[in-house]
Length: 131
Image (cartoon, rainbow, N blue to C red; front, side):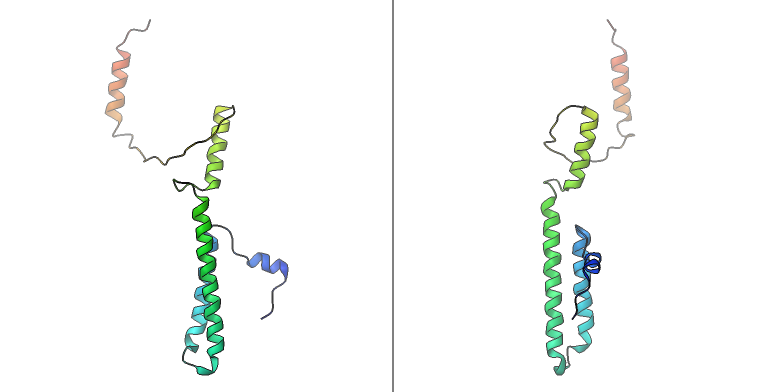
């Protein structure tokens, strides 16, 4: 098997993140699909074994890519890229040195469910005299 030129190898290299794991799994499935019709042919045993070994390597590469993706995510499942976006938004908003210690996903609140509470607070605070 010949190796592609370096510029083609870079273009064919799997992307990072979950797409890398998907690309590796796709290659493993392609190896398996190509070898399925030859499983019962004794004359092609070496070819079948080679293809199955290549499929195993792709599955291991997919496992490693997935592991790196999960390791890059923080404790709340927020990856480094999203953390950088959040830190940049905080820097623009605060305008002074800061450190993002924790990020938690919040549940989406229903504005209509809190409408009565908001209205009650409005009436309560508007009833007070301003000094």
